[in-house]
Length: 498
Ligand SMILES: CC(=O)SCCNC(=O)CCNC(=O)[C@H](O)C(C)(C)COP(=O)(O)OP(=O)(O)OC[C@H]1O[C@@H](n2cnc3c(N)ncnc32)[C@H](O)[C@@H]1OP(=O)(O)O
Ligand SMILES: CC(C)C(=O)C(=O)O
Ligand SMILES: [Mg+2]
Image (cartoon, rainbow, N blue to C red):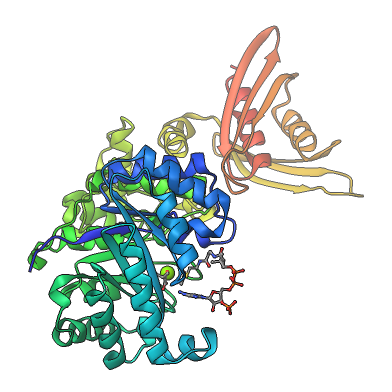
């Protein structure tokens, strides 16, 4: 048996069935071209009978891409097949994908039919499709819940009728991996003419098992997997292309291969997510924002010592530049030291300990720490030590229908001084208290609070400029509390007055 697993991408058909994810023809061509770069073998471009727009997309995709086979979906209905054949007329290699429901539910409650009639319709559809193209794929819809013995009869009949690929969809995502694998194995062992066709998996993710089921199918003899980029698709989605491709690539022991150029994976994921306006969940395998991010100290230390301690895939393999070390209150010194080194700071262990304590104080207040925060933290220790005026306490009362009042306590050469003042706002009140404490005539010339850029928990950065006896003094401070940052910046400036 060949070790090549064909990748059949249905992002533009099953993926596009998702509410809100419909694409116009130009967008579909862009995705199809990217899928070609990604190296998929078959692109299911649409369901031509469903609308003139979908018909046109299949026509234009057939013209725009040349390597992958272009496939069009139909029901086991003559009109659908004729329209699909017409839509595929420009395809270098066209495939008609026809089929019908085979489960008890579908036969009885959807098609209002019986098992023998369904086999007859399936065979007729395949034969009719073969009048137009040599490459006909048959799907036994809801095969996941179809009795294996009956399914084997259907499969044998449609292969005899000329189908060269047989799709075994777990349409409702019901199967367990061993069950789905056993279904494929059953067909491999009990369909006499199975060697004349390729069995295909088409798994849905209703129980979160689409990838596991697809791999189980492949391990039991399927050689085509039907997938979508980012696992997009009806309800909980389809099997995700990137997961199957990387599972096969990572497990060399399986001795299987696909034609996927894994370095195009991230680009494909982002394109589909953007055009379909469907964000990728951060913890999504392979393509999620956090798939190569390490945020806890023990993991970060391990990754910094050797990436493979916590990564089974080199991010570069899927087109991600590098893994990221995200600094949070769960990070340790190793990660902090690494990031500081990247920013050009090299601290002795004792200094690093000090920065680490300040880092933890901030990290407990903010979700993640940016490089800008680190630069402030790294610089602050030194500056703080040299500052003559240290803010010991700040208490403000402010809000609607209150008189803004601030109490400021400052230490100077070991002595502590306290002052309370009112103002037209909390910062004005606090500055008035500071002015009273320093007993100097200072005039505030400029006061700038830098806008919060990332979130309401971000550091507020304050620059002040004060004038005293014709001389200008500058102060800076950063804090998650902007009033504290303002007072510290003001003290920084007035502390410089000799
Ligand atoms: C599992 C899947 O993903 S299957 C693909 C799902 N994708 C889509 O449905 C998108 C495209 N579909 C469409 O545009 C439309 O549903 C059309 C054009 C196919 C059909 O539209 P309508 O003629 O208005 O039929 P409607 O959608 O209301 O019902 C579907 C009919 O097809 C029948 N049908 C469903 N599947 C099949 C099949 N594989 N083969 C034959 N008949 C089928 C149903 O029994 C129903 O027939 P009925 O009206 O006699 O009961
Ligand atoms: C049309 C078929 C292949 C399908 O999408 C399914 O059964 O899930
Ligand atoms: Mg499907």
